[in-house]
Length: 408
Image (cartoon, rainbow, N blue to C red; front, side):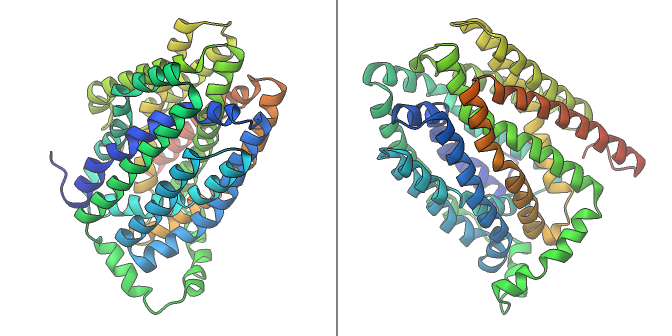
């Protein structure tokens, strides 16, 4: 209730994106399998998407500065979400998913502009709360997830997914238009539009080497970048291959998968309302390391499960949800507060490009590993969870040396 202006508009409209996304995303990979896409092709699609995200992320800072945060968010939200949901709704084979992945890659532009739109005029002390509410918006799908499972059981996977994508098109497009109606250009955005008004795109890009040098001289940003990379790879593996291992190795029917997003979302809702207020003012070290430990334990349990282990799989999902709830909002805040506010768009652009470039090969790598053994991609993720915990510990050591405030 304390949110005002752009922060209120961005947070309040987010359920219209988060609910449909979280309804279809648990079934995305098995939907592709049902249409004849192989494990290796699933990984290849992810890698192709990441390749094009490199280009769109590189241009995101320039576009956000030239067009402004508000206009960029409107245009590229429509392109990156409304269009792909229609393609997925009518998809027939591998080619459709490749085209959709390329178009969807433009969400990297709107991620930059939307982040700036939400945070640039907001109160710094509200950042963790704002991001928590963004995550809560997604977890509101908990109230609708069982419907997806029932529909899949009743009408089969492919027809149900096609209707879910059409629903996503309608709700996401509504969200985009309503959000645009209630936001205004930020102060920094208006300044950057004026400064870049008479500059060509290439002249703005010429400033990137100086921005990169600024990043390299800022250890806090570098540690944050490392954690972003670790979580990006593990999120990509989880989103593309969790349903594969559950349905193909554990032999749990696709119609039953809705039970697990339901439990995951319910725990996260409880976490955000009960635990988050107690840890948001803490130094990020302990909660984030605890989150990576929960992630690790979740995947250790997942790869050891015997077939049809419904209850143990539930424990794995709840551990993963706890890890996400502890790491996600604090990492998002670190990304915002460890960069120069005047160069936020271009710094975020470079950070996203580095993350995408280094993440993109792992789609193909994870797909190849999965074709050998379904558990191998998750062993890779477990290694990266350990790396994330170590980087968090090193970042905390550095912050103590330079006396960075504990509530970063």
